[in-house]
Image (cartoon, rainbow, N blue to C red; front, side):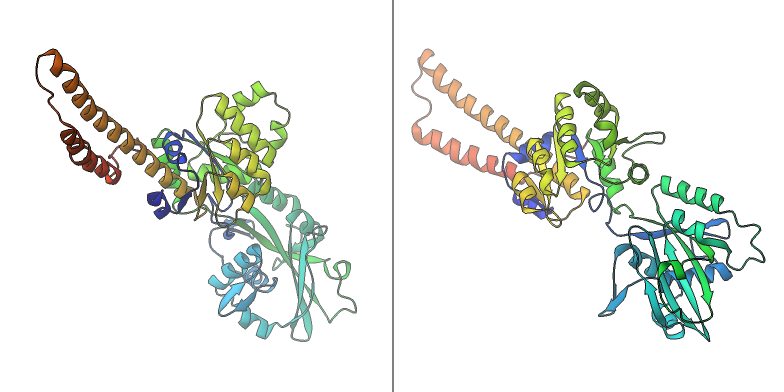
Length: 426
């Protein structure tokens, strides 16, 4: 248990160490465990083309300004603080040379229309010379109908909102969160700053695609699982497209794989569920209750299941799994109490390291038992056969104590520190 603690895995139930060595299936959450839980800008779609870096041009310049200014990110102690998506946008703009502080000095904010879940848009107004410039960001399907054309274009004839929306949907299917940006110029400060008065007659700037990237160590951890004969499964509440995109990057599944959604799981019988879990590596939009059903189906097929969880509703699945693994950083007290192991670092690589140590410990236990049985059986046969052969008692009690304590005990203790065999994860 102390060895596992060094690997950021706290064992709450000692027999769970043996279970770790026998795990054949790891069911892991996505966000924070397989990914960094930190949004990152990966793609820009400007002037009809995709770019991995911020491009140049009038539209790209305005897009960079919009990303830097249209947010509520603040700087505290030299560090940017804010909502993860806005923080990612602001950091990407800053890396491209659009410094928020410098831009605000030239374009001071004079008002804003905050984001709300119904509009799915946010607007900020900035003083620009004698007039105002409005930057708007939000869901493409909500923003594009409000656009009259593309910023910087000679005319609006070439503007095709449906084409841009199709591009946004394609990016979303690849696992990205897509935001659209637009701008508008006003002659002066409007009497009332509200969505109907501000968010109209916009000029489209571009699309920005964000994703919660996988942890750097996650692909190797997944590869170690596959080498060890352990089946990694992703079970998440996220969108199927997002889940599949991350799973493909990590190697959990292959091209052509189809995720199973919680809605589909709800329609399956127990037998159909067993068939589904046998051939599926990615489960999306899954409820905590369905996690329990997945665990049961896997166990019906003879799998030794390790299940991760962090919420109160995850407790039944953690309890039912052969080894429940609770998150130490974002997990609830109820989840920790229901689990046999707590991750001090919410990371799938920690689970794989714990499995490696569990296999090593289990292997050393077997070595100790074999050593003890061979030594003790030698003593037993010597004591049993000597009288039949007319010999005196070959071993006195002091001899037996010496053998058991010195020649048996000390080598047996050495097995506890025996390093793992080279092929322990094969």
